[in-house]
Amino acid sequence: MSRPPFRIVFALFPGLTQLDFTGPHQFLTRIPGAEVHVASRTGGEIEAEGGVVFARTERLADIPACELICVPGGAEATSAALDAEFVAQVRRLGLSARYVTSVCTGSLILGAAGLLDGKRAACHWAWRHLLPLFGATPDPGRVVRDGNTITGGGVTAGIDFALTVLAEVGGEDLARTLQLGLEYAPAPPFDSGSPETAPAAILEAYQARIAPLMPRREAEARQAAARLGRT
Image 1 (spheres, rainbow, N blue to C red):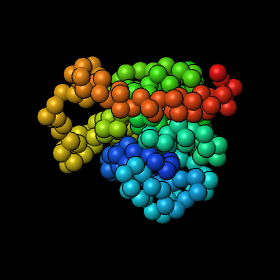
Image 2 (image 1 turned 135 degrees about the vertical axis):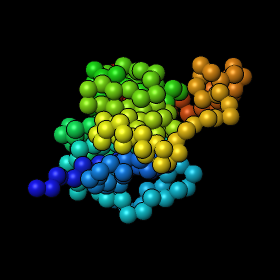
Image 3 (image 1 turned 90 degrees about the vertical axis):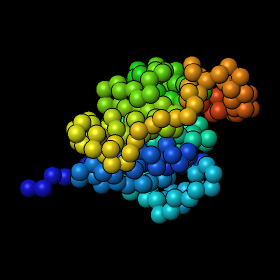
């Protein structure tokens, strides 16, 4: 008797960060027996940051269940957290999934879906402070596991996240083989990938750059948390 497929659902929304999705997708599609669904609230086209368009997405409501749900982040993650139907579908699938996962600010959407209460979770460092609004404990780890919840930090951490999932589902040898085949051997020319290692002037410049976004995103996160009965 053949084994049932390992169904993976990527839940996309307008304004997502494409690498949050495409990085893990590149790896997780190689899980033996994987059946990958790229879905959104309405189906059809979804435009990511920078104008990349993903076509022919499925409707989340049409997917009965999955073994793993992955929610990417993006500039509009907190807006997506206020999309009641999108969040309801994420919650529905997440409640019965074997693994509940996210990359970057996708964890805020998991939080809005009520899937992170009492859990440790990762998020992009600039928005990690919003996780407690949803009853989650912020964790600075690049990949954080708490029970069946696996969350990745900001953007590029999605590949580390994917390798963690691969080792869990298919074994470490599979993860190592795919790491080799996809030549994932990061050696960045600069050591500025975290607030702890970036030069002070670079950190200050980035914080000034995102400062105008803070009020709206914090307000949206608080509104999403209020829908869960949290303040």
